[in-house]
Structure formats: C-alpha cells, structure tokens
Amino acid sequence: MRAALAALLALAAVPTAAALPVQTPQVVRTYPHDPHAFTEGLFFHNGHLYESTGLEGRSFIRKEDLATGRVLKSVQLPPDIFGEGIAPWGKELISVTWHGGLGFRWSLASFRKLGTWRYEGEGWAMTQDGRHLILSDGTPVLRFLDPKTLKVVKRLTVTADGKPLQRINELEYVKGEILANVWMTNDIVRIDPATGKVKGVIDASAIVKEVGATDPDAVLNGIAYDKAKDRLFITGKDWPKLFEIRLPEGP
Image 1 (cartoon, helix red, strand yellow):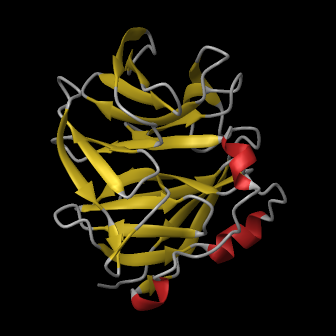
Image 2 (tube, rainbow, N blue to C red):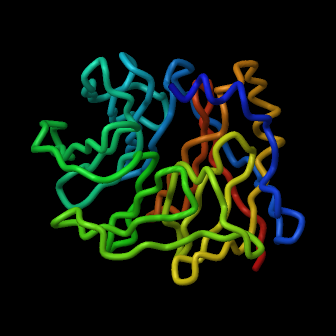
Image 3 (cartoon, rainbow, N blue to C red):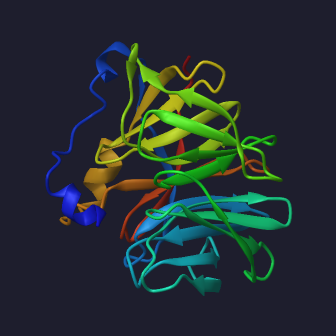
C-alpha cells in the first residue's frame, strides 16, 4: 500500500521550485475535518464538500457540511479497494481507485452506483475543466477523458522548469489552471493546461507545520474550489482541519 512507500521517501519541495515563482498562501479561515479521513479526492459543489478517502477498509465517498465537517451522506467502497480521486460531471460523480484500473460512476444526488469503467495503470486523482475529466496517475502525464465514454482523448506531460514532474496527485481546476498536490511535498503546483508547464508553486509549508502531523503519511492532499464565492480550500490526509486560503497576486 502507499503507506509503505511513504516511509521510503523524504519530504521535499518540488526540486525545481527555486526556478519558479513561489506563492505563500494566507489562511482566511479554518474548518473542522475528520482526522481519520485519509483524503484522496476533494471538490466543492452546490454549497457542500465532497470527499473521497483511501486505505483498504476505510475508503468512502462522502458529502459533508463545510462549517461543521459533519457527514451528510456517504457510501463505502468494497473493503479490498483503495479509493482515490473523484470529480463531478452533470448528475454523476466519477471515481477512481489506486490499483486494478477500476473506476465507478455514482449518482451525485444519492450516491447510488450507476456502473463501473476501466482505465490503464493507477488512479490517483481527478478533476474536470468543463469539457473533459482529467486523471492523474502519479506520473508526469495527465489524461483528459471524454466524460461520456471515459476514453482518453488527450495526454499532457507536466514539466517544471523543463523537467517532467513526478508524483502528481490531487487535482483541482481553478480559473483556467490545474492545481495539483505533489505527493510527499508541501507544494501545490499551478499547471498550464495548454502546455503542461508549471507556472508557479504554492508553498504550504507553514500550514503543514501548523497542523503538526507526526504520521509521515499525513501529507498535504486535497484541493477544492468554490467558484460561486471564489473560495479555495486545502487539507491533508488524516488532518483535523480544512483551510480556506487566499493566494497573493502573482503571475
């Protein structure tokens, strides 16, 4: 499982961060977050947070109240499955799992399972840009999927200062950019979806320090954007808090 791999990796910044613009986020407000939620996917929709969690036997998809963190609706994945990213599309919620190339389609309103779908390789995270679903698999290559067929229509290699960026994890499409956690770092990168180039780095080290997690697997992971109110949220695996952040003006 991914926890075993985590012990082999040192927590480090994106190697090329020094060559890229770096922004330090300002915390606007904090909200409660389930400290036992191993966050793999996060998005905001119609006033509520939607979260997927990982680990075998602990993988859920949940609808939550932002202010209290209370779970309003949930569905558990089979106990042998490690849940990963989620994204909304129309009246559906699309999810992926870490191993086995197995994805699920759910009713966004009821969480009733509508079907399954298949993809190659691992599934790490998902978002959507209004035209495509976007899938990360831990490699530098993002896959853009046709939302109707869930087939790959485009692949995009992400580079930071000219070098392929590994361990791209949770995704969120925000104002024409793809924001992405880089697993086992305190960084969120800003990706140009036209070129794949990283435009800048959001350094969340101060927020990670504030959380004070001692488990090496309790890393920064989870980005959600409330387009209606222009609010950006971040959290991490097994974190007790979710943070609303504001970014300084920059390129």
